[in-house]
Length: 431
Ligand SMILES: *Cc1c(COP(=O)(O)O)cnc(C)c1O
Image (tube, rainbow, N blue to C red; front, top):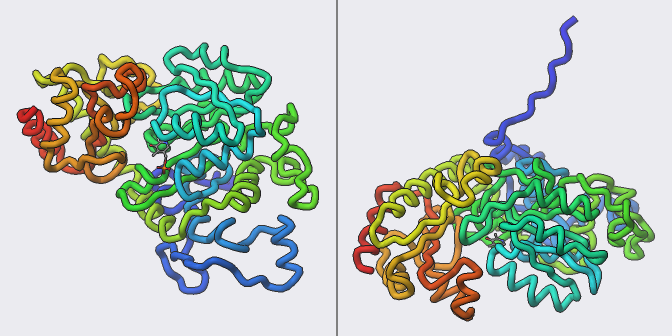
């Protein structure tokens, strides 16, 4: 007798197009419809009561969940290899909801000091107002994470590839430190995307994204997402009351006991989205889903173009240095081979021999590149951090943040690489 055929696990490109989506049951619509509604009719009073008591899954109100957003959640969770996702209004909102589920006033979390500048601000200022205290560690000195652990530590936060300098973090080593300390590892995977790196495979317990960047990919919508890996035991040390203690707002339900390996995602939804409220609009979810359909094609092209441009810049007489983990001589080349072997994404920095003034000249003279503060668009983007995003810092602080006066950051787009290089060539000529 023939054995039952093992179920085929779809590949990444197939999941990018199909995960979470099915033809609309009432209309047959093949693209995911935009369910532009605030609320949903209950079948009857019992159904309503079961929804409010978390005894049944379903839609109540779009602040807590929406069918278009649900397709996006299922898709990104599938791409990352997690159990569930929670889509939110922005990458920063994702970080707030994650910490809201983990931290109480006075608790600490350890974060890499090489992060997106906005995250450094959020952790230093906004989170302090909630009494959530950040302790900084250095991804170039992994032992600094271990030294930072205390009895108040509740999480460790890193980026897989860190903006702006292309820092690659040794995810597996930090995951080991987190798990020894009995806390989850959170990885911001915005720059790598699951196409290049799946942090859960290396021990991450929670993955966050700014969907605004490569997942949306077209520079048209702000969004964020949280992915629950389903790996962390929230009850073991009783450190996470949101997850392991009876919730008074849901008649004493214990989320970890009731929802098991997707309890963290449930906490972010039914306590975070419900009570803090940064819901993603279904229209943005639709645009981001459309972007994700081409994620593998776009990411490979971004990275191939970026490495070609980095190689060309390395040989240019006005360029002092190029920091791109895709170049064999780079400090992070070896870690890149392990964590992002298919490519390094679109973002890297280079330094101009002419310093600050040359940086200003280059961004003032580009024509194809757009001078703006974003990354992960189809278009090539350029910024001189010292005169813009990092302007308020002292020179020493700028250098510490990888944004010294000579630094230019690029997010290489999907145009022909010859055109991208020609534009930089004429802008460098003017510098
Ligand atoms: C942009 C970004 C964020 C913040 O995301 P928003 O969608 O702008 O709120 C967080 N982390 C990284 C790495 C980013 O690039």
